[in-house]
Amino acid sequence: MLPRMPRLKKFAALIFIALFSHLPCSSALAADGKSEVLWFANLVKENYGKTFCSPPNTTLGEIAKTFGRYADAHPEFHGRLTDAQTIQGLSEAYPCKQISPNTPVAELAKKGVKNIVVQPTGEFKSIDTSSIGSVMQKLRGTVAHENDNLVTQMINHSGNYAPPEFFALADLLYRRGDINDAIFWYNAARLRGGYDAALCTDVSARSAIPALIAQMPPDLIKKQYEDIPRVRNIIERLITWDESTPYNYDHRWISLHGMRAISSGLGTD
Image (cartoon, rainbow, N blue to C red; front, side, top):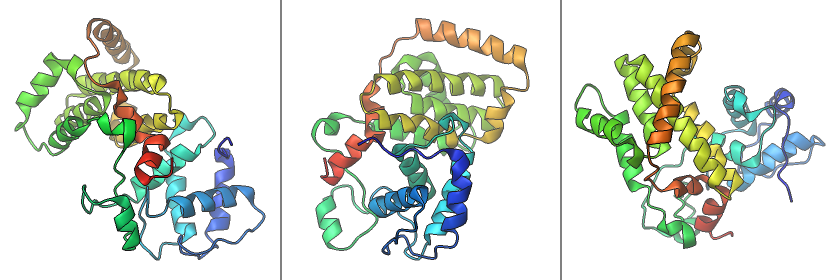
């Protein structure tokens, strides 16, 4: 069955109705005749404690309002929302804290623990993104120039790095005031991220790209439209870079952001 995809222009009505529904997201959800509200409510109920972890007393209205702000900030949705995009937005707004990377999901569920970390299994288990996470953590935690060696390594050997790492690099460069290079690596991340998304057979995994974009400084995204000649030069530089730079990283990183990987980890596939 294809996922329900409500139009964003209807989302305001969804939020309005949900604001008057003071039900905790773990409570039974009554039918009210509004298909879009039921779609959102059921999605929340099915994924609560699995892919997102809001406080126990959070109401459906509060969750809808929070997600409404997320949806409004993502014009790339092109007027429609998928289940995967909605779940991704909820997971960003209400992230689950890691309890133990080695604790089986089934065991945590038996104990009533809601903050469950999904561990990919099967074919997804061979996808190692630990180095990507390490690089992103270092770059995002950089205060001054303590990781200049890493930055130089990424720029000189950029073919060895994945799109999420370029997003983190762009963020660091922007914080340093290096606008031109920040815009370059931001678009390099989008370009190669889009390519990886197109390769992935799990369409829901494509939500990883807008999710990463959402973590970028809004001003960085705006800056690239303030000087069109500058952006044109950056894009020409980007095309030359992409044509001459190999893809030496594992394109499958994006697969772990899809519903197939999540279902695999939850044992529901």
